[in-house]
Image (tube, rainbow, N blue to C red; front, side, top):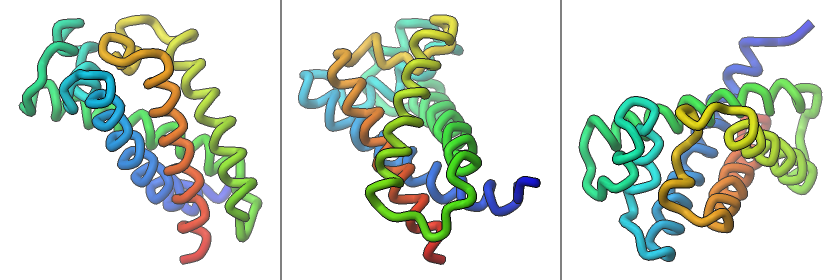
Length: 154
């Protein structure tokens, strides 16, 4: 039987850290690719605001707020699956956590861009290169792994 309260507690830690690391990566990659730092997060709101959301460079509630909330909710979803997958590992070593988190991140990317209807993708494809998106998913994995290790040390 699963320990859902424990899984959800750990997922809150790993998901929050993964959301933070991937959000920072979105801004950094966007700037490196010559785009506005907020454009990828704003693009995530395309499910509500249409594809033009990707061209918005300023912060506002309709684009940035919705985009960040959507991104965070999705990251927390993946964190729940990740924490359920590794739930029996106590403590979790850093290298295996990173390896497992990379696998989860690849699964998330495949689900986001292969299995998900275009309207509900993260929207980063409107702003970032595929290489840039891969870097963001790698940053998400590092956040998941770091959060998993941290949550088990508490």
